[in-house]
Image (cartoon, rainbow, N blue to C red):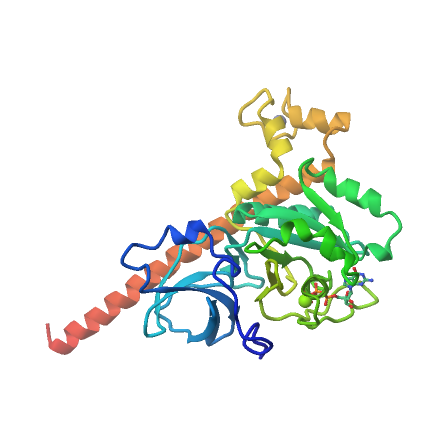
Amino acid sequence: MLSPMTSAQSNSLTLAELGWQPFFQQQLTLDELGVLTPMRLVEQYRQEIELAGEGRNLQLALLSSMPQMVVGDWLLINENDGLERLLQRSTCFRRIAAGHQKQEQLIAANVDTAFIVCSLNDDFNLNRIERYLAMVHDAGAEPVVVLSKKDLRDDVEACIEQVQSLAPLLAVEAVNSLDSESKDILAPWCRPGHTVVMIGSSGAGKSTLTNTLLGEERQATQSIREDDSKGRHTTTTRSLIPMAGGAMLLDTPGMRELQLVDMEAGVAATFADIEELATKCRFNDCKHHSEPGCAVMAAIESGDLEERRFLNYEKLMREQAMNAATLAERRASDKSLGKFYKQAISESVRNKRGE
Ligand SMILES: Nc1nc2c(ncn2[C@@H]2O[C@H](COP(=O)(O)OP(=O)(O)OP(=O)(O)O)[C@@H](O)[C@H]2O)c(=O)[nH]1
Ligand SMILES: [Mg+2]
Ligand SMILES: [Zn+2]
């Protein structure tokens, strides 16, 4: 088991270096100040979590009574090294877990900037970048598209232009993750006290980039499969690692499937241009298919809006709504099942009492 700070170096970080901000400080009452210690969740295992605070680390066993917690969370710890409470998050990344058991899964909390790492090999895909953008907008963090493996492609500028066309103000950078020059390129977002998460497909180079930014081989990396350019899911845990004199870096495992849930605002923010066009359609409830006076269809016809982009917008809107409905249904049935069990138990108690 790799421990982010205890193994290599003792933790001598200040709260500010760990990412403590006024937003968290304001949540402490006067009574809590000086009595409770803020600590940050830096690594998560099945049974326990690793916390880092000012000058010390702490391992905490997970109990079923604890709230759902995720890497990046800030916790208040009492004098007995127990959890007092979880602080409200400034940002939160979530998705629907892959597989049949549709459940919402938290990915990271209290992240300022997300590096959407996307390699420039066969894996380069605008639809996928838009999907990640929706997730980052939903979380409330700042997105930066980091196109990796620029050394493997000739038309890097054209690719940057394509990504930039998604949003004029979007930050887009191309890097060779193995080259230390990446550190300078990404320095504007790696400021002290800033938390940066790496998200993207397996094999995109998230761990390679993490190591380059750290200046040490902290995370294991592995070559991608030659036949389909896919990664091997090398990283399996999420770790929040301090960069010397810089940001807190959060490396994550590549996602097999990123399903959006209940993210209408996140999708809308990602496709702000389409949302803006839609306000100019003749009908308020225009579906942008065959209605007269449709500004979206007019923009596609004139070439101002890429049809691919509109189709992806529709797809992601549909997907998040469908997943939200499925989740709501599940929650409702879990609740009524819970009620049923409670009723059955109290009935059996009454029977035993002979009531
Ligand atoms: N040529 C080149 N190779 C790169 C670059 N970035 C990453 N690689 C290689 O790509 C492979 C996969 O990189 P990783 O860093 O393990 O990818 P990852 O995104 O962490 O993958 P998971 O942990 O599976 O999610 C490794 O063999 C890296 O050396 C790059 O910019 N240029
Ligand atoms: Mg990795
Ligand atoms: Zn329309």
